[in-house]
Image (cartoon, rainbow, N blue to C red; front, side, top):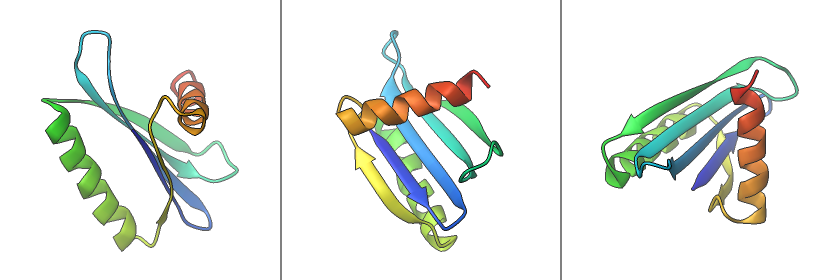
Length: 93
């Protein structure tokens, strides 16, 4: 699952997926739109439920900061695959 929030200047993107070992990974990318400023963090969740709880927490935080959800897709959709490509570019920066 991929979810993205944006404001006029900032974005946050969450990617929840399983790695090749079956572990649940919660990836969070953030930054300023149109710049190289930002970051990427990966967290290992105990299970899918914990990753979804973190996603709910993130949604609450982003709403409180004035960001609005602009994307929510499954990673295997065309939009999701494009978002994953963008994340992999950040991971190699």
